[in-house]
Length: 181
Ligand SMILES: *[C@@H]1O[C@H](CO)[C@@H](O)[C@H](O)[C@H]1NC(C)=O
Image (cartoon, rainbow, N blue to C red; front, side, top):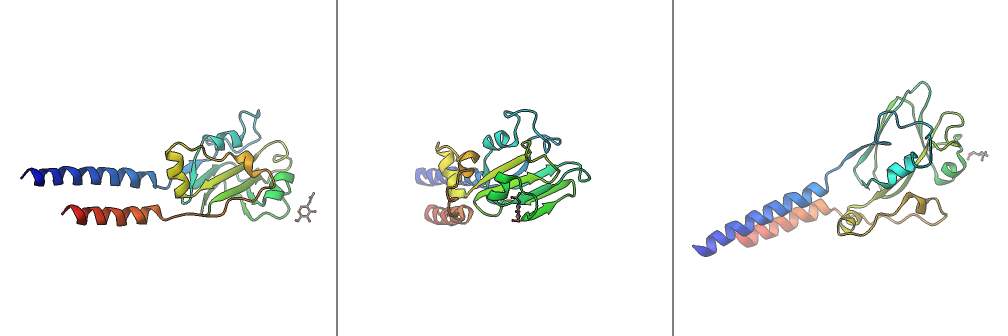
């Protein structure tokens, strides 16, 4: 009888831990800059989009959302070189619908600049460093996230080492439940 209630208790703990871990892997939506009018020339360095990005954690599967006036501005996804030189002539993708959503599908850096004339030069640009779920768990244990500044240097972006954490949690959960009952 005592053995039975201990099993019930430990399996409840397993269930709680499982859903807690699963919640850490939920995809999130990030409003770029934190406010609906943030996609503009920043008023100061501390107000820049990259200082906002440094305070956030971006994971594979999360998405970025931009709100802006599509008649006067746009969001260009560009290469690192075009990001650095503010070259708007050959973007990877152009968005000018005023309500742009981009899903972060790979780990490493994404580079965005404004398509409005002169805006990128005045600081309307953004680097988003996407972490794999493995990185996220490590971050959760206390390791710092890489800062966007690291991705402005000529170093090679980290290779993708994404593991399907959600799938492994489901398997681990199944094994534990099988063990307990
Ligand atoms: C911008 O990029 C295009 C295409 O890569 C290139 O032909 C052009 O010279 C670049 N402009 C500047 C100012 O670097």
